[in-house]
Amino acid sequence: MPVRRRFSKRKGDPETLAKVWAECLETGHDHFGELCELTGLVEPVNAGLPGSPERAEAERLWRAAARAAWERYGHRVLASRDPALGPAWAAVEFGPP
Image 1 (cartoon, rainbow, N blue to C red):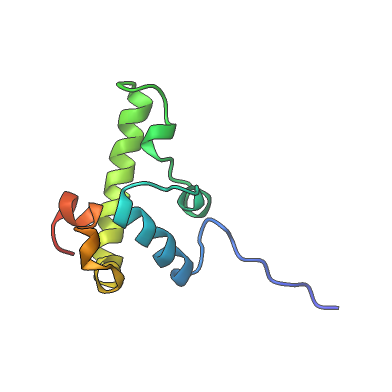
Image 2 (cartoon, rainbow, N blue to C red):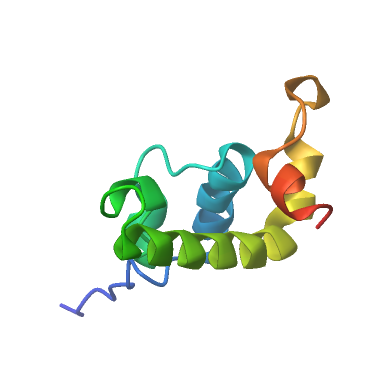
């Protein structure tokens, strides 16, 4: 019997990454920990105490990754977002994609 191919959870397929990033870009948080599982990023609120170097580094990495994801997936997020909800977190933080 052939061996079944396994895909790396860290890499993730593009559709899954887009879906998970969409939630984070809309709210600014990884509510279910899916982004952490797929990318290895640690959400800043889960990294160290407030003001600690660990949290500052996690926040820097989080914002850099969120900015890159906003440039990649921002148009998709805006197209599917209900305008009555107001602007997405990433739109406020980074401007238009």
